[in-house]
Length: 201
Length: 201
Image 1 (tube, one colour):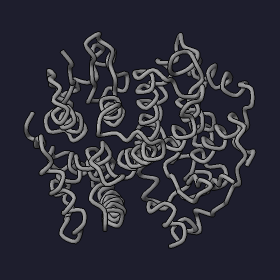
Image 2 (cartoon, chains in turn orange, yellow):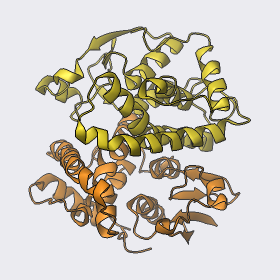
Image 3 (tube, each protein chain N blue to C red):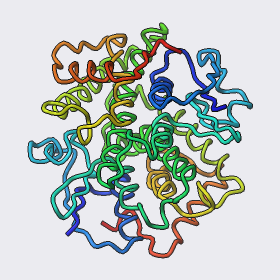
């Protein structure tokens, strides 16, 4: 059985859960409490030396870390990853955009706020992360104006990766009211056949 | 002619320059001064709406952003990207590690220090970025003990991406003295046939 090492309503874990559901692949979910350091044990570090969920474990025990790498691995040869070389590269472009310009701002604020982790050091970083988070949403909004999906007018893993933390951006204090194209795209993703919510663990 | 939109001794730009050199692909380099906002002009934003170098422009004018996406695009079908599905996924795993856990700490401190951009707000972030940067170097060191390259005992784009900012980590105040396996790997990469230094623009 495929195993997903995961945590609560992590958006990074959700990306993989959502794609597995869309692909109809059964898997076992193994839960870790990241606030209690359960991903920093020697046993977990053998699965991912970087000590983070999600980790995807194949039936033979080989492990793969980094949510967006797992998405591409699972999507190979399916409709969620284009065959054409430049379109595949654009999928990667948006996956790296998500991990560099989006997740560290939008997901991190959501995590700090919902887990009540706002000490003085983090309070000082809110403004910068808020500004950078909105800048990422601005980039997405401009790109989505006149488009149905991020790449090639089809649902790809780029949409899955960007959906994961955008649809819960409100939990991090982001207001999506001004983002019409983005909200329309969020609704489109949520109505895809086989869609599962982030709360369905 | 292929065009690389780039900036000075950017490590992200260097990744692409190094791979292009290793592949023997001629290209034109277009230089932008990021400190003067030259990547935030309407003209540049048409190439990359996220306003960042590097951007790789094909002969037909199509543009690709995100250094690690450009690496994978260029490496398709070459010896720098494995054919085997799981090994390819591991390359992506390390590319995402580089952009999430390594670059925002090690490259950012190098940029702030060498460009004298350390205002109060950034000074408050140094300690956290220093700690996270060393954590990333620790992960690399443990992985490289007993290995010659990051994946499959061959030189791949994962090595190129991680080399770019690791070999100049000292410019960001990181001391690599305690990282024996990592320093050995840095020497191995620098002695690869066709290697070019970050200063060869």
